[in-house]
Amino acid sequence: MNVVVMGAGLLGRPMAERLKATGRMVTVYNRTQAKVADLPKAGIAVAETPAEAVRAGACLILMLADARAIREALFAPAARQEIRGRTVIQMGTIGPQESREFQREVQAAGGDYLEAPVLGSITEVKEQRLSVMVGGTEAQFEQWAGLLKAFGPEPRLIGPVGSAAALKLALNQLIAAEIAAFSLSLGLVQREGIAVDTFMDILRQSALFASAFEKKLPRLLARDYANPNFSARHLLKDVDLFLKEAAAAGLNVGSLDGVRPLLNQTVERGLADADYSALFEAVNPPV
Ligand SMILES: NC(=O)c1ccc[n+]([C@@H]2O[C@H](COP(=O)([O-])OP(=O)(O)OC[C@H]3O[C@@H](n4cnc5c(N)ncnc54)[C@H](OP(=O)(O)O)[C@@H]3O)[C@@H](O)[C@H]2O)c1
Picture 1 (tube, rainbow, N blue to C red):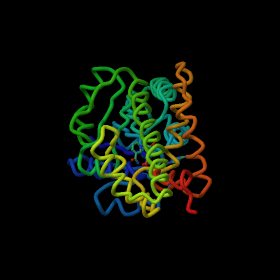
Picture 2 (picture 1 turned 180 degrees about the horizontal axis):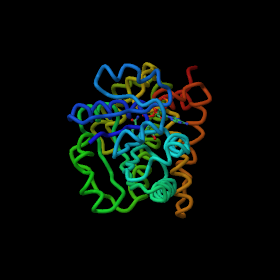
Picture 3 (picture 1 turned 120 degrees about the vertical axis):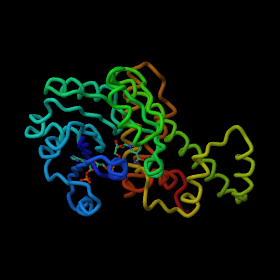
Picture 4 (picture 1 turned 45 degrees about the horizontal axis):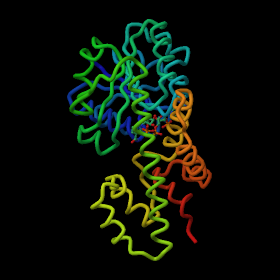
């Protein structure tokens, strides 16, 4: 079976390469063609238009930036009319409402739709360690779990379409909260002239520790946010999606409301495509 990956960005590209490594025929579509010009050499076909991509396979994996990108690629008129008889597996991070709307539109176009957002990043894809959360029916899960195992050992069925999207947002809210909290504590430690090693030693031994702190510390100390795994732009998108869903669910979103302007300032500083830990620049600008 030929699998199509639409969106060969930071995560889509290594996902296409993983699928190829598992012996599948893979076709990729990327809006900016120059970024995928080298893929044919690796045995991955490149489609020039979304419609050509949709025609190329029975299964379409979407790893596009956001709902707008999905609308502009999959639902461009020429591509939409090719959906009939194909399955769309939406794996980017979008909101549950957005995902349910795409389900309706794919079904109306004669296709099948499930969602499978992921936790983890480039290293986890390469090592087949992504956490894959599936929103769909049991029958869809049975049918597609084998394919999804190319990305992670244990895809899980969360519930109907929308439920996995919501769970993914719940997890990404923690990414935003953790980096904001860690940046603030590290900033005070540095400004008070306390040894960072001492701070980290005590933190590591405590229940407060999160491995994300350790992972991001070298970037924060060097103020180096190049070669991102996950961009500030997409974390801001996810915070906005979470705020919308959580407020509609009647939750008090005050804590995350405080993080959002920090991410916005990070983007305004020209760091939208930098690693999301660049939020440190907004919390603790150089003096
Ligand atoms: N990176 C991670 O660690 C990670 C982890 C879990 C989930 N996610 C989620 O997965 C999705 C992809 O993430 P990523 O990091 O791979 O993002 P990325 O590097 O920014 O790639 C985004 C992809 O979407 C395409 N795109 C953007 N706007 C478009 C439009 N209007 N029309 C058509 N194509 C468009 C881009 O094409 P161009 O190349 O032409 O710009 C690119 O292929 C996002 O929803 C993200 O939140 C990412």
